[in-house]
Length: 16
Image (cartoon, rainbow, N blue to C red; front, side, top):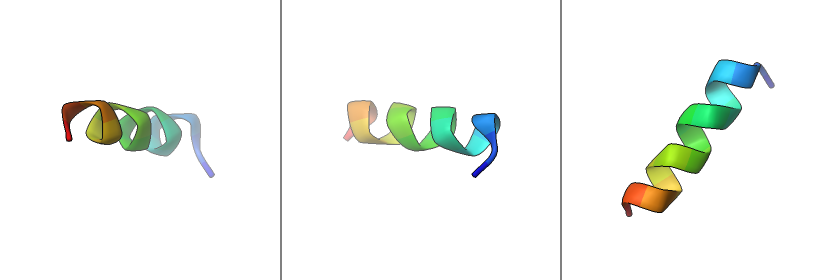
């Protein structure tokens, strides 16, 4: 898991 992917995943969850 790349840092960018992790950040994007967390951001996606927050937006949802």
